[in-house]
Image 1 (spheres, rainbow, N blue to C red):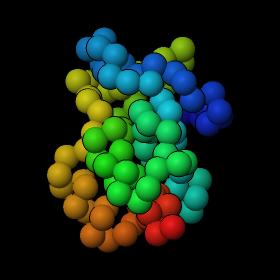
Image 2 (image 1 turned 60 degrees about the vertical axis):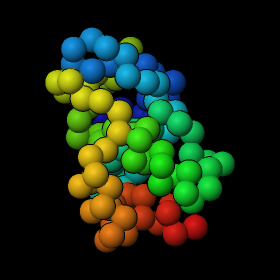
Image 3 (image 1 turned 135 degrees about the vertical axis):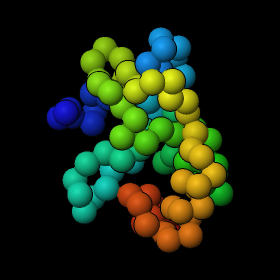
Image 4 (image 1 turned 180 degrees about the vertical axis):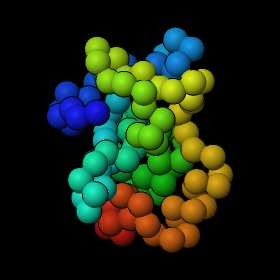
Length: 105
């Protein structure tokens, strides 16, 4: 699916079951791959490093979990905001992922 990032901001996010789980406040981009990898429900530009970690853990959604983007962002299945502890450990331990450079500021 191809969409301008600016068109995603402010869109409500719904689970596949029809429950609103948040609103898109920021989009994390993998600059090497040139694609979105995560949506956050909190704007991250003014957050401290620790607040960024918390936001990525508790207030974000992997873009792979997005089914479609139209008037709303529709997720696959009963997706919820936040990551599993396995995702969190993997990203923080390797420093990889699209937010690795953001975290090193």
